[in-house]
Image (cartoon, rainbow, N blue to C red; front, side, top):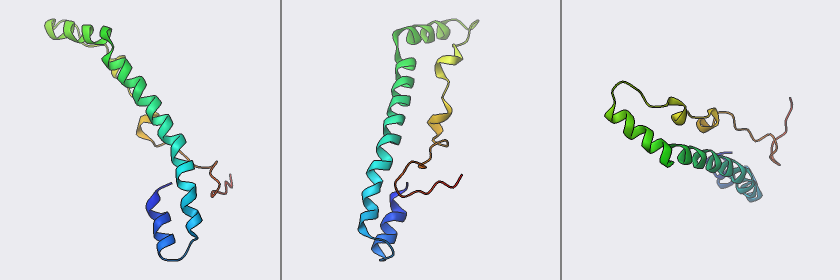
Length: 93
Protein backbone atom coordinates (compact mmCIF):
# COMPACT_ATOMS: atom_id res chain seq x y z
CA UNK A 1 0.00 0.00 0.00
CA UNK A 2 0.90 3.63 0.01
CA UNK A 3 3.65 4.42 2.48
CA UNK A 4 2.27 7.87 3.37
CA UNK A 5 -0.76 6.68 5.34
CA UNK A 6 1.37 4.20 7.28
CA UNK A 7 3.90 6.88 8.18
CA UNK A 8 1.13 9.25 9.22
CA UNK A 9 -0.43 6.68 11.56
CA UNK A 10 2.91 5.82 13.13
CA UNK A 11 4.02 9.46 13.53
CA UNK A 12 0.70 10.39 15.15
CA UNK A 13 0.93 7.44 17.51
CA UNK A 14 -2.14 5.66 16.11
CA UNK A 15 -0.18 2.62 14.96
CA UNK A 16 2.87 0.68 16.01
CA UNK A 17 6.09 1.23 14.05
CA UNK A 18 5.84 -2.45 13.08
CA UNK A 19 3.17 -1.39 10.56
CA UNK A 20 5.99 -0.01 8.43
CA UNK A 21 7.50 -3.49 8.17
CA UNK A 22 4.69 -4.55 5.85
CA UNK A 23 5.49 -1.95 3.18
CA UNK A 24 8.47 -3.66 1.55
CA UNK A 25 6.76 -7.05 1.43
CA UNK A 26 3.75 -5.47 -0.27
CA UNK A 27 5.65 -3.39 -2.80
CA UNK A 28 8.33 -5.84 -3.97
CA UNK A 29 5.86 -8.12 -5.84
CA UNK A 30 4.20 -5.09 -7.47
CA UNK A 31 7.54 -3.61 -8.49
CA UNK A 32 8.64 -6.98 -9.84
CA UNK A 33 5.49 -7.27 -11.98
CA UNK A 34 5.91 -3.73 -13.31
CA UNK A 35 9.53 -4.45 -14.25
CA UNK A 36 8.43 -7.55 -16.18
CA UNK A 37 5.77 -5.56 -18.04
CA UNK A 38 8.00 -2.61 -18.90
CA UNK A 39 10.90 -4.87 -19.91
CA UNK A 40 8.58 -6.75 -22.24
CA UNK A 41 7.32 -3.48 -23.70
CA UNK A 42 10.87 -2.18 -24.13
CA UNK A 43 11.93 -5.38 -25.87
CA UNK A 44 8.96 -5.21 -28.27
CA UNK A 45 9.49 -1.56 -29.15
CA UNK A 46 13.26 -1.55 -29.47
CA UNK A 47 13.93 -4.86 -31.15
CA UNK A 48 15.63 -4.54 -34.53
CA UNK A 49 12.56 -5.72 -36.49
CA UNK A 50 10.46 -2.96 -34.94
CA UNK A 51 13.04 -0.32 -35.76
CA UNK A 52 13.26 -1.57 -39.34
CA UNK A 53 9.46 -1.51 -39.69
CA UNK A 54 9.34 2.06 -38.36
CA UNK A 55 12.07 3.11 -40.78
CA UNK A 56 10.08 1.61 -43.67
CA UNK A 57 6.87 3.41 -42.64
CA UNK A 58 8.68 6.73 -42.44
CA UNK A 59 9.81 6.35 -46.04
CA UNK A 60 6.54 4.92 -47.31
CA UNK A 61 3.32 6.87 -46.73
CA UNK A 62 1.28 3.97 -48.14
CA UNK A 63 1.69 1.76 -45.08
CA UNK A 64 1.38 2.51 -41.37
CA UNK A 65 3.28 1.10 -38.42
CA UNK A 66 2.21 -2.21 -36.98
CA UNK A 67 0.08 -1.00 -34.04
CA UNK A 68 0.28 -4.22 -32.03
CA UNK A 69 3.94 -3.62 -31.25
CA UNK A 70 2.95 -0.49 -29.33
CA UNK A 71 -0.01 -1.93 -27.45
CA UNK A 72 0.02 -1.54 -23.68
CA UNK A 73 -1.25 -4.21 -21.34
CA UNK A 74 -3.94 -3.12 -18.88
CA UNK A 75 -1.55 -3.97 -16.05
CA UNK A 76 0.66 -1.07 -17.12
CA UNK A 77 -1.97 1.30 -15.75
CA UNK A 78 -1.66 -0.39 -12.31
CA UNK A 79 -5.43 -0.42 -11.83
CA UNK A 80 -5.66 -4.17 -11.25
CA UNK A 81 -3.23 -4.44 -8.35
CA UNK A 82 -4.52 -5.37 -4.94
CA UNK A 83 -3.00 -6.34 -1.65
CA UNK A 84 -5.49 -8.95 -0.49
CA UNK A 85 -2.56 -11.26 0.27
CA UNK A 86 -0.90 -8.70 2.58
CA UNK A 87 -0.47 -9.56 6.24
CA UNK A 88 -2.37 -6.40 7.24
CA UNK A 89 -5.38 -6.92 4.95
CA UNK A 90 -8.48 -8.81 5.91
CA UNK A 91 -10.14 -9.95 2.70
CA UNK A 92 -13.88 -10.10 3.33
CA UNK A 93 -14.99 -11.09 -0.15
